[in-house]
Length: 219
Image (tube, rainbow, N blue to C red; front, side, top):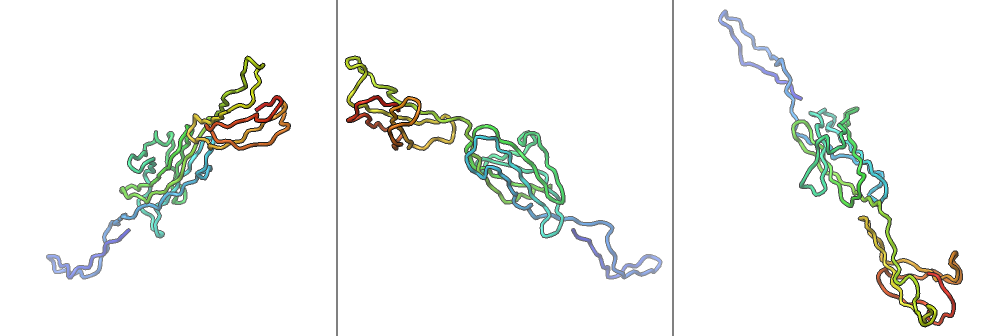
């Protein structure tokens, strides 16, 4: 904000009156070439994987160095820093609120997603803030476990075999994926864990069970 002061060399009217005083203009000149502060992002998931909705709260100030600027008119977000979304519909119909010079807005992500979120603030004169980032990782689908074969089959020996090659495969229809290593337990009981220990296996890699055993086991 500036006030324009004018000091004439000499002002003289036709009647001979002279005014050489310093005068001040009647208006105020406002300038804003400073971008808003980089947005602050509150992400309750802290960028970790979750199976819940994530509500992101974003805030920024256009009050730079104690001088009130033109004000924030828009927040925008992007998934690639190329295409930006900033219309009211992009923010679930939410609008910017401003309190004590701090403007804020929120949005909830409910669908599965695995991305970096880029956010920026824009003031009324088009000055654009630096970009802030957070991570969104939502997976609402449970992983699956497939055991092949699920039991021994041998019609000639009442389904008894000397040993059995087994493949356990982990899969996830969601976006998080699953780790490739799990554990299996060979139990002598169908309803409880008895007679064995937990053993590591790698998803999709066959392994052999039952060697040198002479009883029924449950995997």
